[in-house]
Image 1 (cartoon, rainbow, N blue to C red):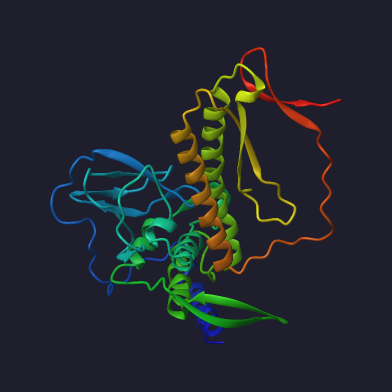
Image 2 (image 1 turned 45 degrees about the vertical axis):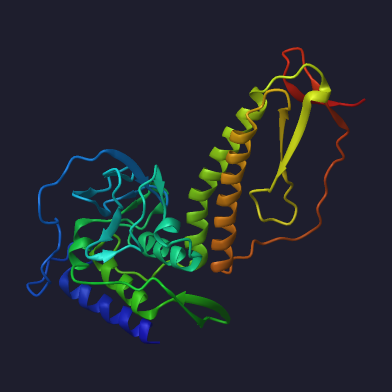
Length: 316
């Protein structure tokens, strides 16, 4: 009830002031800690901050700082951690820079904290349209000066109409999101649900799963055989949690496959699937399923084709 009254009161105030995205800074706003003191060093390398691409998030790595661009790209210094901010709100923890950084890394592998960071960023998207990425505008940064956020969880039952669902975002964070969204183009609004945030974040994780699968498949399929006895099958987990999902099967030749690289890529793929599983459980997401699983029987065997690569052959 408090959140509903807060949101209603905020809407009334903003309407009187002329809307959401065009709010002017207040004279009592705390002094900003941005940009950091000192000269801005040139970056040694670049990475990408993604939950889809995230534009406009501030970051600092050693003596280098900036804002992520339209692709979510950030710079960093070798040997220095990187920290991400919205205004003065630190997003999780400082992390080692990598080619790709997501809320999972910022949450130190804590799925509920990762989901809360994802909900925070997705809810603050300027146009409230996640299909074109996430953009944090300068007015949101200004409004977030002097503020902090607690992304840890707080389990509670929330009544929504005739149904009850679990919520683990602290009320203080929910209220902060409603306040900060008043500075967005789309105007003030309540946080995205855990389910919606999971569904969006899982697309980013799926991209990583599919990339490692493609790399592993390429390694296996590039190995060469002489006879069918050289060919093997490596089975891995399905990337889908639906009841009727089938495991992944990759072909390879025992003669010259780079087994270390092959297994490393599959292990990385497995870790991304683990991330997705943990986030799904944290969001209490259950995919809708009904009916029974029907699979057409496949009669096939491994063979070594004329190009000396392993493949499946149908048995007549």
